[in-house]
Image (cartoon, rainbow over all chains, first blue to last red; front, side, top):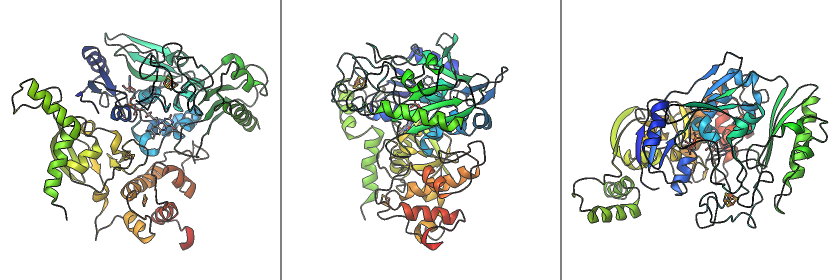
Length: 313
Length: 218
Ligand SMILES: Cc1cc2nc3c(=O)[nH]c(=O)nc-3n(C[C@H](O)[C@H](O)[C@H](O)COP(=O)(O)OP(=O)(O)OC[C@H]3O[C@@H](n4cnc5c(N)ncnc54)[C@H](O)[C@@H]3O)c2cc1C
Ligand code: SF4
Ligand code: FES
Ligand code: FES
C-alpha cells in the first residue's frame, strides 16, 4: 500500500472542503472496496479523509412519504430498517444478497454506489485496462469476459456494474444528494448518476472532484410485490451473473431493473409498457454479447419471466 | 518456542513502516533529503490510536496504513485472529467491533480510535470457554483450526443478529422477525470459508449453542 496522510472529518462540509484542499485525496467510508484496491495499488490516494464520524448515519421519513438514507448508513442497518423491510422490500432483498454479513456491517450507502468494477483485468495491474490506466487498452475484450456486461458497453470497456443495492435503487427512482467543496448542494437522479463507459471508462459517475454524497432519497413507496432475484455461480457470497429487481403490481405495469448485465444498473422505462412476455427482449435490445457471456441474454430473459410470473400468481 | 520478543520487534518495525520493502525505500529517501535522523518521515507521520481490546484500553502510535488485523496481531500481540486472504474474501480475520462482526483486514486501525474490539481471546480462554468455543470443541468444528477464530467470532455475532431481527437472504418474509434455522445459519456464515470443509460440524456447534438439536446428535 502506498503511504498516505490521514484526517478525520467532523462534518460533511468539512470533509468536502478537505478533499478540495488536498491533492490526491479520497474519502474513506466502510473501506471495504477502497482498502482492497489500495492494497493492490490500483487506488493510490495520497490523503484519506475518514467520513465515518460526520453523522449522516440515519434513515429518516421525508415529508412526501419517502425516505432519506444518510450516506453513512451501513448496508446491514438499511436492510434491517423497519420501513425499508415493509415498504421497499426490493432494497432489503438486494442488500442482503450482496457480499457477506461482516462486509455489510461496514459497507455504507455512499460507498456501495461508488464501488468499482470486478473485471479481472482491472484487478491485474500487469494487464492493460482503460479504466485503471486510460488509453492502455482493454484486456477483457478478447480475454476472459464471461462475467462482464452485454449492455452499455463500448470499444473501450465492457465491465459490468457490480452493485446489487444500486439496481434496487434504480427501480425505486432514488435520488443522490451531494455537497460540493464550495458548500453547494445538488440532487442527481440515480439514472444519471452512473456513467456509461464510452471513450472515458475511467469516469464512472456524475460526481465532481471533492463532491461528497450526503444521502440517497427514495420517493413514496410503490405498491406491488417487491422482488430481487440474483443468479450467481454459488448460492451465497458471490457477485451476480444476472439479477432482476422488480416491483410488480397484481395487474398493470411492472417496474424492472437488471443487474450483472449492464455497465450501469440497467433499466429501460419504455420497455415496461406492453406485455410481460416480450419485456425481456425489449429491455435487452441492443445487447452486444461476447461468445463467453452470450448466455446472459437467455438467462436474464428467463429470470425476468420467472420473476414476473411468480409475482403475478 | 521462538524468542517472541525479537520476532515481534522485527515485524513491528516492518509493519510501522508499511512492510519491509517500503521501509527500505523510505530510509533511502530520508537519507537523500538529509532529514534529521530522529525525525520520522514527514510524509507519513504516525497517528495515535487507542483501542479497547478485550476490555483493556491501550494506545499505540501507528502508520496510518496499519489495518485493524495487523494492529491486533503485531501490536497487541493477539495472534488468535488470523490473516487468510487479506482482501475480505475468507472471514479468517473476523472480529467483533462495538458489538458487530467485521473483517479486520479491510479496515484501518485508526478508523476505530476509541472503539471496543473483541477477539477470539476476549470471548473466552482455556478453563473459561465461551459457550460457542466449547461447542466447537465438543462438535469437532474444525480440522486445521486456521479459520476457527473467525468462524467462532462470526457465529457468536450471527446468533445476536438473528435475535436482533436483522433479515438475511434466507429470510422468506423480510418484514417478519427472522427465526433460527440451519438455512439461516448457512447463509449468514457464508462469509467464513473453511478450506478443511468442517462445515457440517460447525453448523452442529452453532445449532447446539442456539439450543436446537441437529445432525447425528439430534
Ligand atoms: C469479498 C467481497 C464480496 C462482495 N460482494 C458483493 C456483492 O455480492 N454485491 C455487491 O453489491 N457488493 C459486493 N461487494 C462490494 C461491497 O458492497 C462494497 O465494497 C461496499 O459496498 C463499499 O462500501 P464502503 O462504504 O466500504 O466503501 P469504501 O471502500 O469506503 O469507498 C468506496 C469508494 O467510495 C468513495 N466514497 C465512500 N463514501 C463516499 C461518500 N459519502 N461520498 C463520496 N465518495 C464516497 C470512496 O472514496 C471510494 O472511492 C463485495 C465486496 C467484497 C470485498
Ligand atoms: S472491461 Fe473495462 S475494466 Fe475490464 S479491462 Fe477492459 S477497460 Fe478495464
Ligand atoms: S483475511 Fe480478512 S477476510 Fe480473509
Ligand atoms: S478448519 Fe481448516 S480451514 Fe477451517
